[in-house]
Amino acid sequence: MMAPAPSRVVHWTRDCPTGKRGYMDKGDAKKVASAMRREGTKVRAYPCDQCSEFHVGHMPKAVRDGEVSASQFYAQKAEATAPV
Ligand SMILES: [Zn+2]
Picture 1 (cartoon, rainbow, N blue to C red):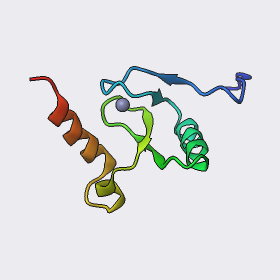
Picture 2 (spheres, rainbow, N blue to C red; picture 1 turned 90 degrees about the vertical axis):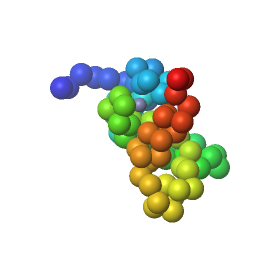
Picture 3 (spheres, protein in one colour; picture 1 turned 135 degrees about the vertical axis):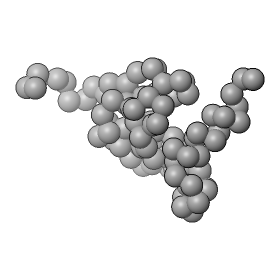
Picture 4 (cartoon, rainbow, N blue to C red; picture 1 turned 60 degrees about the vertical axis):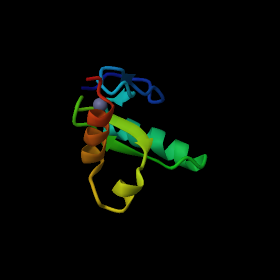
């Protein structure tokens, strides 16, 4: 695995059923999240249950407070908004 990949390129897909941008590399997701935080946007990188990639998103209060995990929160949300 010594391919000379350009270091600035962040790979992402839209394979996720949630429609969010999925980062295949946790480090990439963290880089994106920290760049956004530097600009004042409170986001975090988190692993997704539904696509096994990483997403960058806002941190819900319930997750910040430790009431639910991010994956639990998004699972509930996905259920709540799922078409019947
Ligand atoms: Zn996902």
